[in-house]
Length: 277
Image 1 (tube, rainbow, N blue to C red):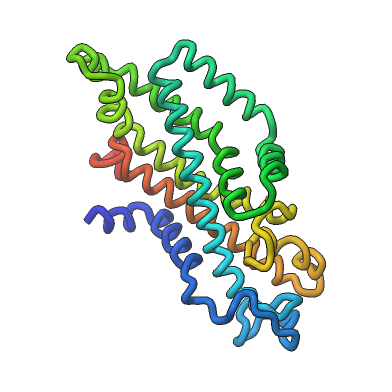
Image 2 (image 1 turned 30 degrees about the vertical axis):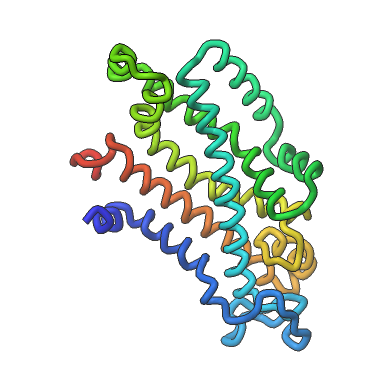
């Protein structure tokens, strides 16, 4: 019933989940995404190639679908790293405060002082190309902002009366964090995760566009926008337009899904007439 209510009450969230499922279905790919066929190069969208072909005769639809798998893998890995680091930093900083908070927040300030793309390019320049290095770079780059959000949530929970009661009854810090703080910041963490996936996909696309992402011939939305996508923008605009649409739909889907999950998981927004409005 809760799933049915979610689909009725949050149609955009359901639409976002549907878009993600569709983009991640490799069984929908009609062709091998890396197989070249010179006879089919630069074909316009048709029944045999719904999104057209590129300058190597590769099917754009197949490359977009398989590119979703790469983007999802990168996004999940990066968000897992950034969320883990941000949760640890946010919990330590928000719960203990004092010198720990000052030191950790100054480190976060230093990381946030540089533009995100500059941080990513610097990390990639040190690590080199590769799927694992891209995931690590995106994970580190996304930690600072998420840590601030989680710290704010912890600060709000820490001032509640039941935290003082738990301390008075002799609960250790790790017990208070595990039993009382973490469950109550699950909603903002979930929002951070879902929004972070969209941000990670955009960041990976930017890195691939600049040549620092996943190396070819692996399909990547950002790489499809760069190189031949720019070269043939006038002659074959579908080479760049459809990967761009895929990026937009994926980010939109994760944002809407995150908003719906927040409303479902947040006790203040769930269960009452006001929460369901």
